[in-house]
Structures are given as C-alpha cells and as structure tokens.
Amino acid sequence: MNIRRTATAAWDGSLKDGGGRMSFESGAFDGPYTFASRFEQGKGENSEGGTAQKTNPEELIGAAHAGCFSMALSGDLGRAGYSPTSIETTATVHLDKVDDKPTVTKIHLVTKASVPDIGEEEFQKIVEGTKENCPISRLLKAAADITVDASLT
Image 1 (tube, rainbow, N blue to C red):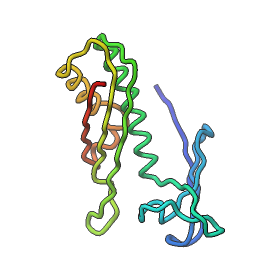
Image 2 (cartoon, rainbow, N blue to C red; image 1 turned 180 degrees about the vertical axis):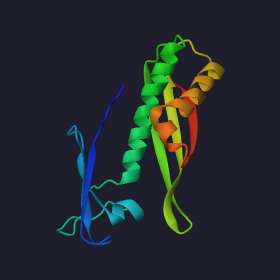
Image 3 (cartoon, rainbow, N blue to C red; image 1 turned 90 degrees about the horizontal axis):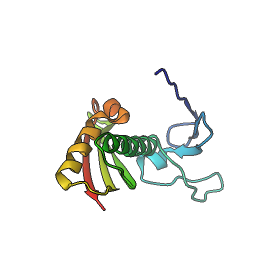
Image 4 (tube, one colour; image 1 turned 45 degrees about the vertical axis):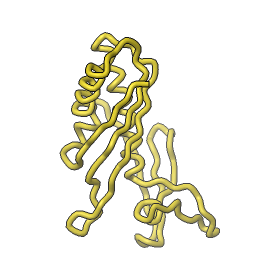
C-alpha cells in the first residue's frame, strides 16, 4: 500500500487580521479559516463584517480521527464476527497552552454503535483495540492523549 492524500492551505495577511482557505485534493472540502475560528471559539467574520462559518485545523483533525475510528471499528467488529448496523463517533480535540504555545493535548472520542449480538465486555475490548490501532490514532497518540467512551445503542 502506497497511498498519498493531499490538502492545501493558504494564508493572506497578518495572524490576527488575515485569513486563509483550506481545501482537499478530492474537492470534498474547500473552506475558510481565521484566527478567531481557531483560537477564539469564534466563527470569524467575512469582509462585510458579518459572521460566516469557518473551520480550523483542529476541527479537521477531529473529523479525520472520528471518520478513521468509525471505519476501523466497523472493520475490527467484522473481523471479530459481528455486523455493525451503525457507528457514530464524535472527536473533541483539546487545544491548550503548553510552555506558552498552542498544543493539541488530548483527543476524546465518543462512539455510539449498534451491533447486534455483541456483549458489552467484548464490545469495549474491540473498541480499545481500535483506539490503539486505527491509522489516525497511531499518528496522533505520540503527541496527544486519546480517550474513548463507547456505548451500544
């Protein structure tokens, strides 16, 4: 396997007053980001002074991790002989100051899955394995604490 994926980001202007765009090679996403959307819990402002939806790198990391985890959990459950009917994962990326620098310190996953005929203990065991081994968890666990709460629905 030798897969490459590309995303692009551009920034114009100063850190606090400027703005940028991030896009995926696939065309599935192309959106703006600003200082406010990243560091101030804001949505940012457009050039007319109105509020416009904007993203940030941490939100995109969260989406990547949630998507990877849900897919990997489906695969792990399947390999264990179960057929999940649905899996939904939310990833909360914690951006805190460490040594006075913004740092991703933790990613908390909350997963809800519908999996017929599985017991809670077996489900939690598989979830823990997925948390350790999905590709995005493997990438991020060196820098951030990854936790997961999982429940069957």
